[in-house]
Image 1 (spheres, rainbow, N blue to C red):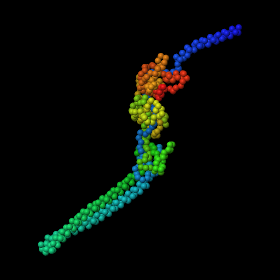
Image 2 (image 1 turned 120 degrees about the horizontal axis):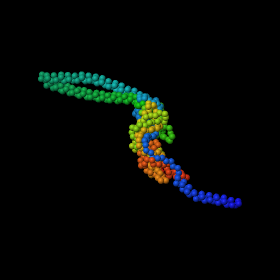
Image 3 (image 1 turned 60 degrees about the horizontal axis):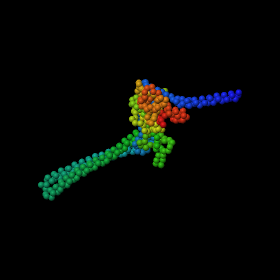
Length: 445
């Protein structure tokens, strides 16, 4: 009886195993047909608010340099304001030691006084000599007149006396002519000597004015109102006739006691009353932007405040500088964008980070999908839609992008699209791994 029961139990077990063996292929086939669970969304049509989000950095829209004056000799700083100090137009920013220029001014003043004295003395001497020449000229003219009268009486005299009178007249005329030539020559010489002294006086006057101008230039004032940013004193690193700079070296700013060369930028004044934002926008957002569009600005250091701004300029070409590593490996390029910024009278330091929300044109009848549904294949945008029981890549055209949705063309409303790459999902179902690819920087293998 026990053996019979054992045989029956064994038969039942064999029957169960046979049924399981027959049903397993059907179960596997159903599982394979069902596939992995892929999240989806549908292509929707409706109103869409166009907004573009980006980040940037505040910088002054206007700045001015404070440069060491073109003065020969030593320029030593005796006073300089610190970096971060707010100054108004006309405030003193830098003062140099004027001792050397004051000495030059005193020397030029002494030369000017000496030239004035020489001119005064020369004019007095010329006046005395002119008076003497006038007397000598009158005497010579009188001698000529007297000799002429004597010659006129020669008819009453003998031949010898008459000849003597003629010779005296000729001699008197010769002396008069010679004296006239000498007076004219002395006058020309006096004028030349006065001209030389006038040049010396002009030179001394110019040296005095230059020294006074240099003294005035020893005080550098702020050309505009703003925040002071001191320049780096590279001359302080000079050694052996050259400047030595090593990695990680802290280059000092200009400070009191430092010496500077003419033309060195001692400080920069940044006008914080007029600020602008330097930012970048992606090429997918560039098409929906134009100059003059209004934007909301949020400063990271003042997170509770909202500031107004608008697009000031948009680059026409993609930026080729200052690219990040992700930019270099991404097919999406960026464009330099400058925004006007109203600080509302607050003194906000340049260099702080900001977030910008650009208000675009609202679309009333737009065909859109979530941005997660966008992928790239061979460098072109696609979406995955369900055809029969399979997912197929379908090419589309992107018109605009918002933070969460993409306005597209090339697909009908209501189409079901995948929010993840079905190929990667199948790989996960087969215990394979792979990176998710989207149009926001990835490339579908």
